[in-house]
Image (cartoon, rainbow, N blue to C red):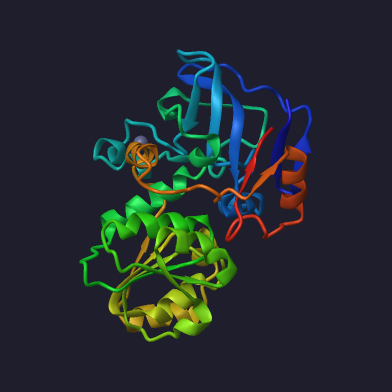
Length: 320
Ligand SMILES: [Zn+2]
């Protein structure tokens, strides 16, 4: 089969990757659609020492290993063992043997087929298109923010970013705090925010007054955390959702976070079932957030070129 493979010395499209083997407790899926954004770009750069097939959010059809051959399913990207101390303590997302599809210890979906544990399969409501499902991790992360960050109605809340993660996050947080605003780098991309009635401003006009109670970093840019640290009030909270911001923060930013006693929280793995339910009952509008459809050939070309158009403001769906 064909698969995009991250190796120590680069990224290739392997036309003869061995088929995933049937293993007990695992299902083999034919990939229908897979996310192609900043996370896939970071995986191709070797984030966390990753080698293998990238592609973290997968929608596919069961072809063997599980009941319901032909059934359309999504794959919950965080895999756990279910038996370690953390799993037994209710921290399955932080399992001692945690693997993440397409990012850590498990091949992802930029391939014709992949094998995943049956426990990771999630049924997809029939009316939800594949495009909506590959945005699921953003909904999960936004729900995680709502759970960890207190957001009283009077709180000042800023979401940083103009890509799909920011759009999804603002919609989810608005259910807790109607004053949520989004700061964008590219005003032409804020049309969807206008349509949704979400407040936004160009980032260059907003200033940095260190007065926000909560800043959620969704830029996918290396300077995202630096900017968030200048927006948040002393003893406020920053939640970082994009790995790029977390990986390359300026040392001066870290000093500011210490001196202003800022709580910094990472957000990654929120509740899968709750996220699907929210999408299924039209709780958030994700139409138009997947901007491109790519073949594997085009996807590997962009990964090899480290093309930053993918991720951040643009988000694509790769279709084998
Ligand atoms: Zn475990």
